Length: 95
Image (tube, rainbow, N blue to C red; front, side, top):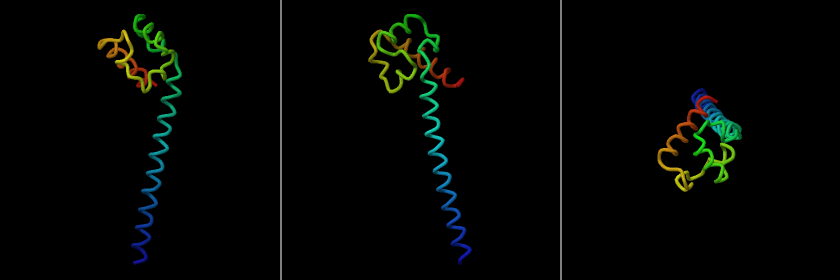
């Protein structure tokens, strides 16, 4: 009986530790994403037209694109948005 309770307590403690670890890793990932996002928009090696459109709309750093509705940026069409998101994915994949 006591042994079963100890196993149960140990299992609960391991679950708590796993949850805390997952939360810590999630926070770490978010922090690293924002640190990496501090790079200038030029780091994405976008076509000059796309780069100028973004700069004209206040996107000077990569993190300026976070939580931004790209469809609302005038001058960015479907193909430019597709290129931009592809380059963002590549940028973060290499980091």
